[in-house]
Image 1 (cartoon, rainbow, N blue to C red):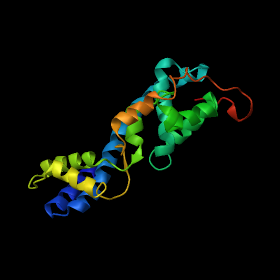
Image 2 (cartoon, rainbow, N blue to C red; image 1 turned 135 degrees about the vertical axis):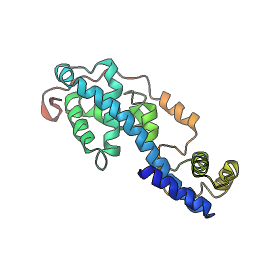
Image 3 (cartoon, rainbow, N blue to C red; image 1 turned 135 degrees about the horizontal axis):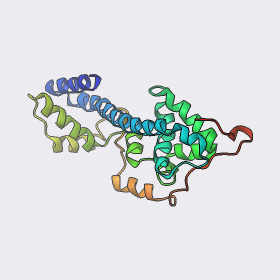
Image 4 (cartoon, one colour; image 1 turned 180 degrees about the horizontal axis):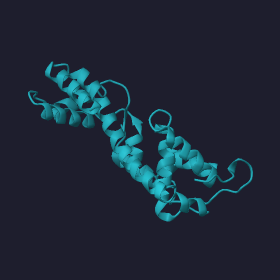
Length: 212
């Protein structure tokens, strides 16, 4: 409902000829769309962890087919936990105590999350904080114009105009990096191969186990 209202607001701005305002407002639409997609992915990961909670409690090493789910949840926690999904922070802390702080820190860092700990690249992009590309904004504006009708919108001209103006202004968005996609994929491949499955930390000090 909130997303539909945001799209309607953008459509009204386009109909009123307030293109610059629409370009700024559409960033909220892109952010909301990215968050919804991220929530869908996280829901699947949480479901898997919930089903296998008792198994995880008994194992010293995470099963291979759970590394992506566990690492993706740890990655999402600092980006969504405090405001939107506080239970992620709780779960992330529990995983840090079971598998070690080093694992949790590396699974949270953009430089090692995907390349080493198998965080879903799609989820990482959805949760990335960056100004949306002009192409992404123009494509969203074109979809909104078509959805609500009564608005003529030239997508190519909008992209060209936003590039001339340095992206069209506005604050940061989520999920659509202002970085060349090929460069982003190259970064994902750097940093070595994926690490082995995280093993339970020792029982001494702060790295002691905690039951899931």
